Image (cartoon, rainbow over all chains, first blue to last red; front, side, top):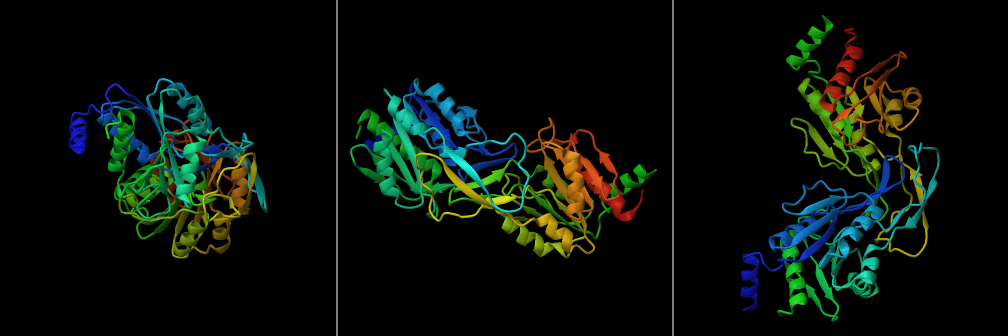
Length: 231
Length: 231
């Protein structure tokens, strides 16, 4: 059976042998001054699980990670960055050589337009921060891709399917892994996730509540099916 | 000698026996929407080191901590909070019963005035975030203190002494521990620190580069000297 074939492939860890897999993970931090920044609740667990699973599948794995408290995964080349701009630059260093790119990182969409050199002292009353857009890394990759199988993540709090399908098209991605980050058992910081995979043929595959390590394997198996057309 | 006396006190861990010590540590996170927040680079190491040292000195220690990746210190009642407002409420629950209050936490001075219920979708162009002041916890404690010995921290990037002395007066604190967070070996995330203690009599005490565990002991010894007038 297909399952047995996959189990066998997985057992000997050859399913992604010879493939270069690029994974991004964690949040980014966008400085406002030397001590303050904008960030988000991503902990990097989903991306690290994918990097580990890809290594177990035999791939040559590079992980580009924002600030997390997780150790570098065994066998994975891990590069640490802080900001969206640094993430963009490191991803571009590895993109063209990659076969599969899986962007789990929760990269900031906006950053403070003006970064103060010294710590901003508090004053009475309100103040406003002007935010500017960061580079859209997934979009840039979708425009430049040649052989790469490009997977994006969509962490949403509402209208998950609509945003995911829109992202698949507008970013020229090959797959979007979507989750509702306010659903119990899914999203940031948890050890489990509930995701739906959206593909370019319009189909979707809903996965049940699973440990992130299992979600990682299912995503990689689905990518393998797409690449090899073994199903 | 005084040092021998202190060593002896410290050795038997009785220097703060019977004292209730309240320590705050770590950053706070101020939500912009369900996934994004403002924060700062505090890792909680200095505060956790003080809580551990106070426990070793025989005190009854409560630690109120923002999000950190550090485990709860052994023997210390640890309460986890996220926002400046939650920090304020928990500190107030413990303040009146405390003998010594050491505020190492890097509590946000500002928070987004409007918190979005759903994740804010990105749009082309800039946008502005209106920030409002959070409650000034140190100031509130300075106004309400009775028996408490109140210690504040000043993490500055410039004009450290001026800001520290001003903070001592304006917050009615008994001691300000100041450091320049951009100095090598000091500040956020490091395992060492370089601090100066400013006291109400106008005197200051500069400590050399030390592990945060040693800085913690020196701060507590200085508090003991002030409380007991043993020097």
